[in-house]
Amino acid sequence: MKNFDFYNPVKILFGEGKIKEITNEIPSDATVMVTYGGGSIKRNGVFSQVMAALDGFRVIEFGGIEPNPKYETLMKAVEMARSEKVSFILAVGGGSVIDGTKFISAAIPFKGDDPWHILTMGDKVEVTQAVPFGTVLTLPATGSEMNMFAVVSRNSTTEKLSFGHPLVFPKFSVLDPVVTYSLPVNQIANGVVDAFVHVIEQYLTYPANANVQDRWAEGLLQTLIDIGPQALANPMNFDVRANLMWSCTMALNGIIATGVPTDWATHTIGHELTAFFGLDHAVTLSIVLPTLMRETREEKKQKLLQFAKRVWGIDVGTEDRKIDEAIEKTEAFFQSMGIKTRLSNYGITEDQLTPIFNRFDERGWKLGEMKTITSERIKKILLAAL
Image 1 (tube, helix red, strand yellow):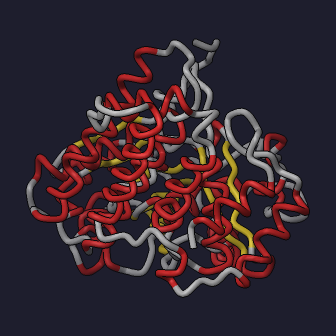
Image 2 (spheres, rainbow, N blue to C red):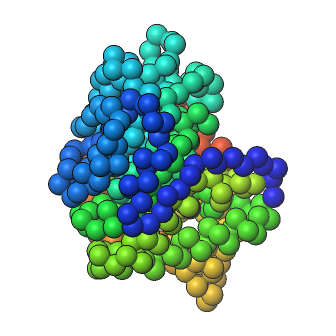
Image 3 (cartoon, rainbow, N blue to C red):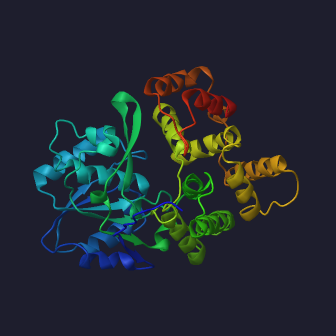
């Protein structure tokens, strides 16, 4: 196991009726900006619960944050927050709203010329302060409610980039499984796949003698495989939705990444598919992961065999056959959630992939836990996904 430092200051308020407790988590003199997406929270009763909890606070609303939040939209929120002297933000929504709010939080006090630099500076991100914020999670998927990472898209440059900083950990997050009952089937399916691949990115690398992290990751994967279909079939089953919500949070709150190598190539490639074609994030992951697993089967061989045995219960056959079957079962699981796993299913052709190939050539990035996934291998992965 590698050396590690672990820090996660997020307070979780979990369970039915917990939204009302946000009153006690926000400074009483705060000017609160409530950020949200397309407005479903006003139809399903979540907004009214939030506003009841915020009674007595000065509240500013900012809605319209898109799936795959756009820099152009978020900058409008930044300008509003600056003019209204917002001192606390409450993100009410799924991962996109929370990711967007993290950027808003960091961009409001940003001192540089262009807050987009927060996204382009990578590990040298220029964040020295951030407006505090909390979240009310309405869509379990990304784990953004309990981590310090965010992904933002920019229309003008056709880019989707990420950043992370300890200053954008939420102060608290409310996880009430009841608010997920009204979610569309495709959003639940996307959430299951998103969380599954989050775990894979931190698990399917090479052995690091991290027994606790491996078993925890395997347990999360098995839980998602078990409850994914149940969550689709029984939308108002509290226990199923509670386990789904907590699995998605635990998949990316940092715990299973401690002391182990991590990959994130599937996400990096998938971000480009979203940037160029507007595909749902989870859809891009379901397209990329199976072909990436096939392309990297030699360097991931030991963990693929462990994955086959411990997660899918595959004990019979040659090593190659076990790996093949594990990949086949993974892709079949995504398909069983109603997600198509080929680029051609979405009308994408080989010619349309050229700008993505060119972008990875220009960047010269080497992806994966061992930095062996070059632009040439990325091309092979995407062509195999057609």
